[in-house]
Length: 277
Image (cartoon, rainbow, N blue to C red):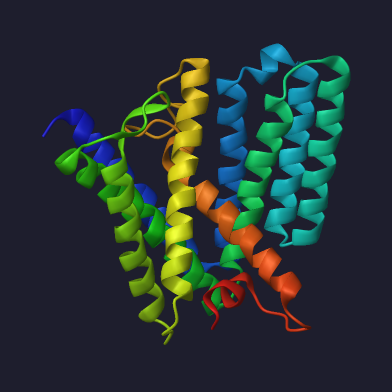
């Protein structure tokens, strides 16, 4: 076993232990994890797109917004964190339009800020939030793992050759099928659910996860970088590890909000809304 592979395995195990432990304990532990991921994602986004060099004042404003969002996330002030996100995205969008700088600034604030908010709100502090978070982990991880191995074993037409030449349609389909099985198994191990809600949700999140992966590949190809950073030994950066998770969480968070708006007076956590339990 090479030194690089050994380092990659050790780092992966350490990361998995930290993430799963924070998910298990929930509360402040997971909110701290969510806030840290949001801040680190903005750091990598701003580094890749060179926001400091292209718009230092705007980048400083972006950092202020992310710090405020992270603080609100730690205090479990979801409404305030969303208000801050909207305000800073709108303010920087106006700045960009007036000063003609770079739209990567409001895009980075939105992407990073919503990451922290969505993660914290999905986990919440109840059993349903815990199961929903495990469900998302299972669908995203199963998608990544089986898309890689099925794609290598079967090959075939490329999924998006201009963005990520290694990805195939066979891998995408294999990953989606694995996500449905893994996600459904997680939920059914906690709750009795015999409708199609869970496998359909797993399919949607798997597709979103793969879109998130392609989106980050597009950004890195656009700016000519291999890894988002070198923060994680053997793995690159945080964005390299959570790209699919971010889009899956975005989808789950926004879908839960839409469903909640259609419910008459009943208040449930995001886990209760999406899992129907």
